[in-house]
Length: 143
Image 1: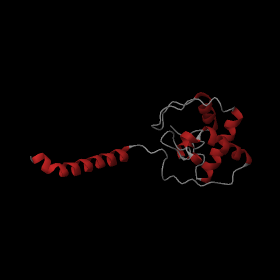
Image 2: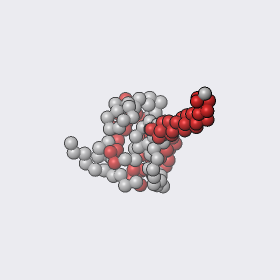
Image 3: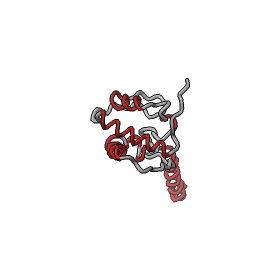
């Protein structure tokens, strides 16, 4: 019978096909961390040091280590978050009320009710000091 004579060839083709399908699938799956964004770390003020700890506990799961972003949330070390486009008030509002997804394809950010107003200020200080050390400064927002 021809099938039994060609059975080893079918196995090789089948295994090759499965391997190829696995490689293609992996290539199109999103990665958990955004790769390639190198963040310069400054000497933080004491308020920013407190903010760094709070950021790690409350924000880093989505916004990444050093605010570099993940597949779940945008990098805050990005010019769109400069103080002229996103003033501190926008961060306070985001933490308190959440944010409808509008700049990035990450979906909506839920409110972070466990973070107090004072803690939010410390987190903002951390983000702003990171931004400055990475060349992100105030630029007027003109629509």
